[in-house]
Length: 443
Image 1 (cartoon, rainbow, N blue to C red):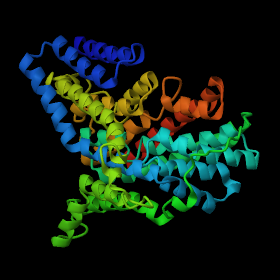
Image 2 (cartoon, rainbow, N blue to C red):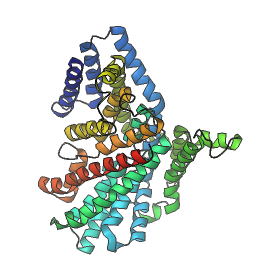
Image 3 (cartoon, helix red, strand yellow):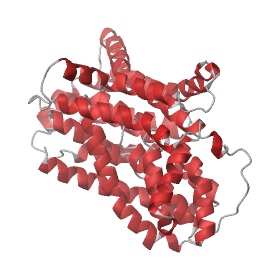
């Protein structure tokens, strides 16, 4: 009981520091981990070892993945490639299915691009289509936001799922497959919710010409825009299949080459390099510290540091013997896949950041995967996706994404809660239900 109280106290300190005092999550997690270690009576040497092992261990496997994923997304966004993909989807699905088109566009673009950036990029299209079709602007913008959040929390190479998979040691190829499947199926009830509920919220767009919009002739072609996303994802999935113990693709030098190219860090490096071909006129300055790569590093740095601090907290928990405690006290409790979901759901709702919620939850769950019956390779994958499901909801006033949606569209806080926030809760509950069903069938 005392150990549980100390864990809850440390978590409360972290949340209060982030929410009330606006302290950076890196510092809050890092200091919170040390305070936890001291309260648990860990020796100074063990605390220092936990810091170095936790921070260094996870960054070696996850830091580069986050950085390369952000570089890829930055080039896709800056060149207009992301907008090209969105417009093509819109053309395929048709303007008659406005909300479905926007939801699918948000879902696809938020795989390589940050969720907030996706909403900002697609907002002009959502506004224009609302004006042309007469559909409530609340419905079109929320279709984008919910589509974006569904993949942002569940499908690598966005930072949250990559960091979570790295901390838990889950196979990234399987996380991409099952995360993609769960997030796509989650769109079904979300689409119904938008069509039946959000469209009834009265909101008309105020159109303003965007002088800074990239000229269409300067944008890359559709296939060119898609290649940097599809190539690394395909390589990772194929390598994941090749790595199965049964060796379904056989053995030999070709398979070894596929396994090498499909290693997540190599695959994402290939994707990042392919994204360098997207600008109409390539300038070496784009790769400089003041160029797009420099911007991407600035975007990725906080996420990488938060991931490292979360790993320190997880290693501190592990070295304090919390795993043995859970084994003795929870061996008869059937928490299973729902515990990581509930922790992530609570943390996301409490402090607002999807990435912080996922990384913190993964750090807490990693030492107790065994006692929870989640330590098989397949269940590590489903645990990663369950954490992503929890981090979907609830997005409200403490989440930057909530304010991006409401401020861009002119929605009131109440309208935002009744549309975007309620939608994220539906998304989270739907996703964990799907994960549980899949874990029974596959696990």
